[in-house]
Image (cartoon, rainbow over all chains, first blue to last red; front, side, top):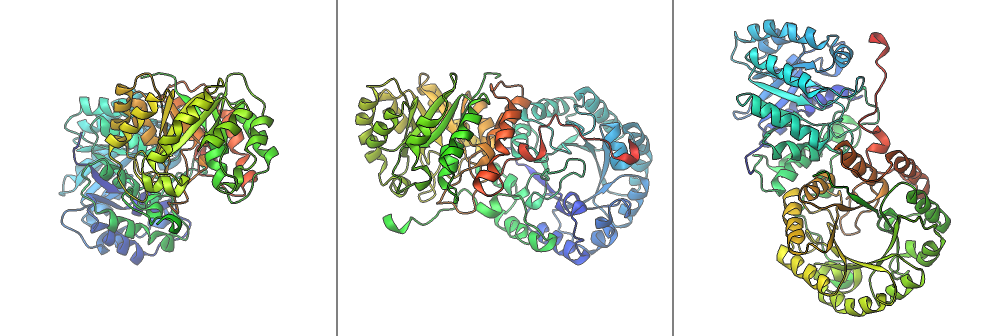
Length: 307
Length: 307
């Protein structure tokens, strides 16, 4: 139960993509470079998607080629289609994170593709990527519920995972895209994926839409999940779930695991320092608690009356 | 694992006591009456403490005698000393919640009493209460850490629990007063209390200072805790931990348990309706997520382009 956990920092992609204020390319690069020194295992740096769909990430190639590559960090890009694979490989991206949805309606709203249409293009994407040394992962959006359709049958998700594994993709990420998952559901689904596909690297991508993000991460870890997506400052959100908060906050997640005695490889102080630069970059406050309250080891002076 | 959980709503006491804006007595009574219809098991309605120490709760007697008493709800008051017992009994309070700290420095800062000094006055408080039908509980502040002293040895907390039980007090609440607890710690300490004192009703009082509130509640429930303190809208906080958020949010806690299939006895819609009245009462936004994002069962319309 004390296995090391691996943090994939997704703020530069999942966070920045929905910010109203455009973050300058140089600022993105500076933040990613700062994150590279925190000890996170991976950084999802950008997405090679249509600049029309996501204007904030139109500078994907500049970011991916402009960052300093730390030796022990994998730099990931989110990839919706074959064109994205080609663009990402041209920038020496370490890991390609193919994205698709478990629900047709979310897939159509988000990617203009049903679940089957996304899966149908994966073989060509895998074949093209095979010409490089890039590692492959597939993220399954709405794996715990769809904001348009509601509950998603676990059997449907397991079937998608099976097909992803058959394609030779090394990892799969179960995404709680709009924060519909609860701890029991997370534990059950992750347990089944780990049992059936022990050779697949399983990552959980929780959102904190309904305040259950860290509880869901805990539940996943309790059944053996050791890879987590999280966003600095809890950036992110979902255009289809108004009022919602974003991804789970990286520094809050790291703090929880460290307080539990679980090794994350991350230096919390440097992570919090990076988080404190965000409000300046994005023009608003962030959601995380540790950046505000400090770690649980922080002590306070006694009130003067009794000191 | 599907045991019913019991919610003790503490916003009228733990929440209102630190609000800057004075909440009118009639508004307090109206909110408590509204909460009485939500299905919560208990409501901590006020504190019979010094009006000088907590001016916001100076109307304790008016509140306790002014509320409508729902048949299946217990109305609790926090009690720091013998004078408080007498005042509470004069108002037919259902349950007296004695308060003390596991750490001397927090006890002195918060109650002007060390741990021993608080414990020393409990026998007289118990004896006075025994002349009524009021139930007794004792809340142990800083049970998972003290903002001045840091870690509190579990042995010290267990010793305090032992002495509380010997006094014939029926229940004990472990309070994470400034949100220093982590899920492993909560699970271990609660497991030991439940194992050693099976006849004592154990309540967890989590704060969300470091974002771990629901994860801590989950961890406690997993080892058998079924009583939880929570505050509507996540009100509360701690004067000794600036920037911190407050208690765990009742509607978020109820939502999590309901999503997991655990019976809380609470109607979430009525609880959220009560929460939505808070900003008007207290003059600022609240911290909870469910009041903003809705329950995980909420569906959204498809974007027009693909509908």
